[in-house]
Amino acid sequence: MRLRSTLLSALLLLLLASCASTKDVAYLQYAENKMQTEARALQDATIKPKDILTVNIQASKPELVASFNGIYWNPQQQYSSVQSGIRTFLVDNSGEVDLPVLGLTKLGGLTLREAEEVVKKALTTYLNEVPSVNVQIQNYRYSVLGEVHKPGAFVSANGKVNLFEALANAGDLTIYGIRDQVKILRENKDGSTTLVSVNLMDPSIINSPYYYLQQGDVVYVMPNNAIASSSNISSGTTVWISISSIALTVANLLVTILRR
Image 1 (cartoon, helix red, strand yellow):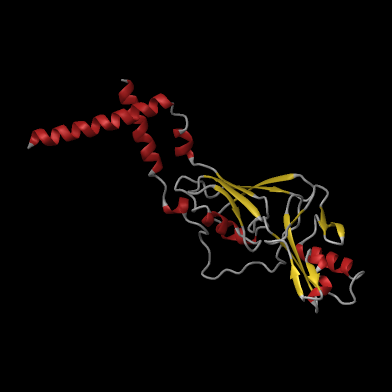
Image 2: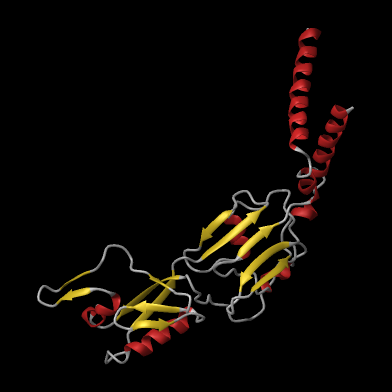
């Protein structure tokens, strides 16, 4: 009796898993042949505590800004020496960065462009020209969890990634992932956390403020009812399903041999 119940449960799960239709898994449904996003300013990433930054400063003469880049310049031999690798700076819990010569500089909460302007302004005390400053976040990290093929943490090389790119990097959703209730967990500037649900099947998602991810975002894809139900099956039932499958395979093999 227990074996029959187990087999029926396994069959039911298979049937539920096979019930997904195209309308349940297709992205951006009912979109027009040509759809344009709303005109709005792109949201730049803001610098947060624990971010790792690179700050590159350039001027008309390299020796003028060598010390600000952490480089030792030898005027006699016309060469510079710098520690191997790219020099990075950690944003502390107060949002400050300890830059060469400039010391502690408040960059937390600013966009990259705003941070560049702050550094430029600080440099005017030392230079007779306006230098070129480039600030980049090196650990622009986000995570994708749940019903995807390759869950994990990822780093964006250019500091910009949209939701579909993030899911593609995670190997796309499995057939069991719920596409109209994808969760995004985001930490705000004030330290609070926001949890939202987005619908991948709705074309208007491209106009959502959560379409482009920010560093530290966590994307979670919930499982559908079939997978959620299967998690309630005990380990003993799983063993019975495996044994039953082997028994059925052996029985079919014996029947085939005896019929010859």
